[in-house]
Image (cartoon, rainbow, N blue to C red; front, top):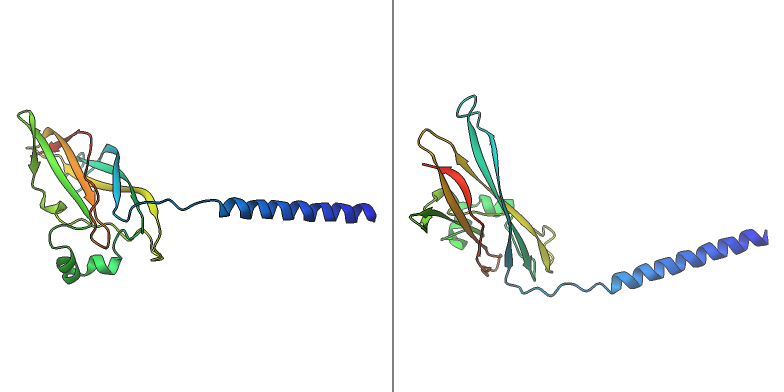
Length: 185
């Protein structure tokens, strides 16, 4: 009986030490000290050739996925679905570009020239901290752009410039991707 009590006391002591150690370790974790202005870093650019059933039985298109790493001190990145659906709100708050800016450049005659893509004029990503509590946040954002093959499309070398802005309209730095070949008319 005494052995069982000693064993129980020892198990309780071990559990107490373990809980105390866990509490101490989690209290030692400091929140990152990011600036409230978002900061981005180029991560990767990937191209996937996928079927395009709307253009024919053997037709394909290229999907280019741009991945950036981001960090923001107060975590106010993204818009709610309701905000993204409200045209009056979008036009009032974001008259020129959304919260994700994508500029496309094509290599022509040895230099890069910007391509006008109206589909990429106002881009938005969803709210990244749905709980709304301020605090640092970091992660990855992926954006996919589709390029269609056509009878007139030719391979072209392009690159992108990306920047984001938070809900307080603070604009991040601008990053540039590596180059990639896609079909362009």
